[in-house]
Amino acid sequence: MKKLAFALLIVTTISACKQSGKPTTEANKNFAALCEQYYEDGLKLNPINATFIGDERYNDLLPNDGSVAYIKEYGDFNKRFLDSLTKYDRESLNANDKLSYDFLKDQLDMNIEGLKYHSEYLPFNQMFALPLTIGQLGSGTGAQPFKTVKNYEDWLKRVTAFSVWADTAIGNFKKGMQKDIVLPKALVVKMVPQMQSMVVANPEQSLFYGPIKLMPKDFSPADQKRLTEAYKKTIQTVIVPTYKKLGDFLQNEYLPKARTTSGMSAMPGGAEWYAYLVRQQTTTKKTPEEIYQTGLKEVARIKAQMDSIKNLVGFKGDLKAFFEYMKTDPKFMPYKTPKEVLAAFEDIHQRMKPNLKKMFDHEPKTPFEIRQTEAFRAASASAEYNQGSADGKRPGIFYVPILDATKFNITSGMESLFLHEAIPGHHYQISLTQENTSLPKFRRFGFHNAYVEGWALYCESLGKELGLYQDPYQHMGALGDEMHRAIRLVVDVAIHTKNMSREEAIKYMMDNEAISEEGATAEIERYMGIPAQALGYKTGAMKIRELRAKYEKELGAKFKLSAFHTEVLKDGSLPLSVFEAKMDAWAATQK
Image (cartoon, rainbow, N blue to C red; front, side, top):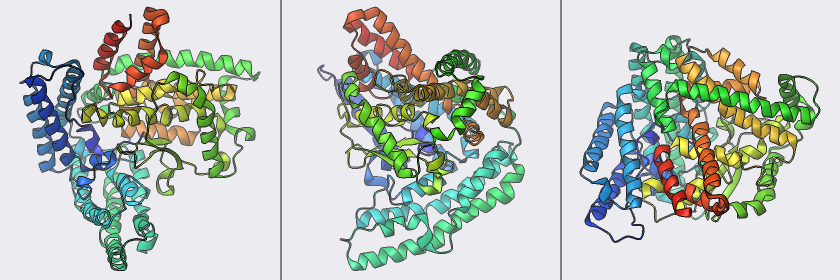
């Protein structure tokens, strides 16, 4: 799923807390006001989040989120609301507001603890980067709207602030250099061409000229002329110089000081910082070592299943040879054009529709589209889901990077990928939550990595029930995707706490799943750049699957899968501990 910039970890927001069938008490009214204030103040701190949500009030703002002033404001914001929260007796709130209280307490505590680690010294990397997000927003086809003259003027104001943001980012990179808190060289090498690709001689060749090419025909001739000139000037005087400055700094000053090590434990305080990120990203109290041991067990379990499919299709040779066969045999690469690849994903959608209706009581109203990832970021992008807007005007989009359609391999797990990134994975979970106006806004628009990605990975396990995975190679692809998430538990922890090198991690991945060296490299570098994020998937999915199995056993004939799915999704994203307590309470009512 698409992640927003640094600020996402700050505020995944809150609003008026609706009642759930009980009389409104004074405590509930006041708590609702607190939630509303938190939501509104949070959007001002995170205007890009507001844009992705579909709230256009702050589309002209770009916060300088690495500045000393911003970080102080962010810290004060979290402390102020944590202090306000302590004034409420949790037990006096209704069941729905208790969930809001628990979510908010967890979020604020984690945000405040996170300030100890100076993440601003690593302002962006090859994947998690405002300079890339700005490219998506400014292309004219992303979350930033370009439908009215005001929309066009908002973007000019927002992107003008990018230059100041970049100066602060360079200053923070330099502070990190002084304290030996720097990115690995392998990542910086990928970042330089990303910046250089935005440096063009002719403004009309710029990605940021897209909105002018797509300008609505009903704009007056005077507005069309004025905006065209303004966009050309901004590209020449702000955008191109800013990307050039970032690229030159990374190439000439930062790269020579970047580290040759791969993991966080190589940096001062890095081991403690990583342990914090593990707790933040999994929303559990699990230690890195516990996660690592779970990963080893899961790798062994899934490997046994893969072996059985290899034997089923009659392949002679070991598992690694089978992976190589699936990666290289031309029969697994039947496509000639990107259009054919996208059509194959739509076919998956249509085939599972009848069973989908049996397993889910609700489907989203938000439109859904499958699109090819834009060329400017396709080389370093994974397939991903970009959420639609809450009002349904902007569709949820499943992006597929297709560098060469003739090399797009059907054994890569197309069916499981669609279940995860699209339907019923991210599209159902995010859209149904956003559309549920009876939820507080912080839960409508909230994001916990372990819950959101855990749900999407759990959805991959529904393939057979949805009528997919009939072809053994697609089932193998699905097991490959599950193995991929299990491997993450091993290599992410080993890189950041056990001195596993980038090269050793790439080898471990290629030894245990059917992935190209190029694919494994991009994945391992992702874990180097966004430590612990990849741990949330398996942690969350295993929890949902564990609870389903428990309730199936406890409830017997009273267990209904569609009702279970409704309960999992209806309250929005929650920390796993809060989620489990809520689910247990639901199961008790089913008896």
